[in-house]
Image (cartoon, rainbow, N blue to C red; front, side, top):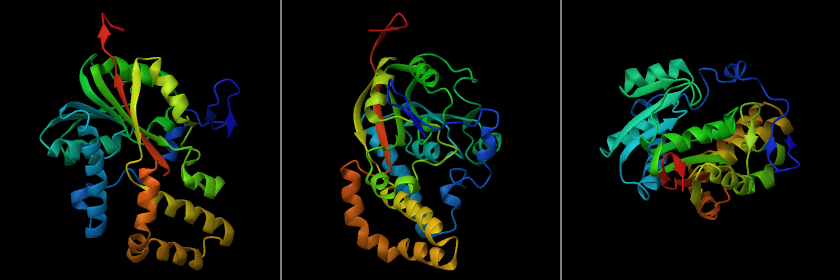
Length: 283
């Protein structure tokens, strides 16, 4: 990891090229999960549904409906949650062709295969553009922000999540923190730097908020630590199993709830609004 002496941006060095990057997104990559309604575990189905519902409710506090584009939509579970409310016309952008085909066959949604730099999208068209756990994966982050500003309607919303450099997990776990996720994560902007980057394109943060995931993120970081300290042994798996049990999760829920509302969990979401545009330029 290196830090820019000018702006303070943390980034991976060296980084995989755009061509080799897809090697690190195999079919078993966690976001390429099956439809929530097809989840065999009832408790996991409830947990996943609740996570998507929290995202929808958070967005609808600012925008009650309209056209939504989900960038890096994986297998479409967030898109489905938005569409099922009846208030949203959804489409996605996804570089993995297999994941895109799954969305089209399972949900029937329109998906552009590629990334924002390669697909052709209309200007001033979307009410909301989302990037859930995507921005830190991008090889050309500022170019993507420029496109987001171009395709949003005046007053539209850009909602995104990034690793939280202020998280307690990072302070506690250090190099074992799940937020690093090398080599898939390329950049780690702070909230202050992210606000500066966004403002260049007329996007202004209205709120930072940790929505959920504090418990799961801590559990993954704990697993990495245990596997390094005592190896990938039965004991390590057993301890992770105990930490992930329902009784432990319920017992620690007040602590992780507090971490979440204090915006100290591993992932933080930004809600940025595009200021009005006149003649294609920002006011």
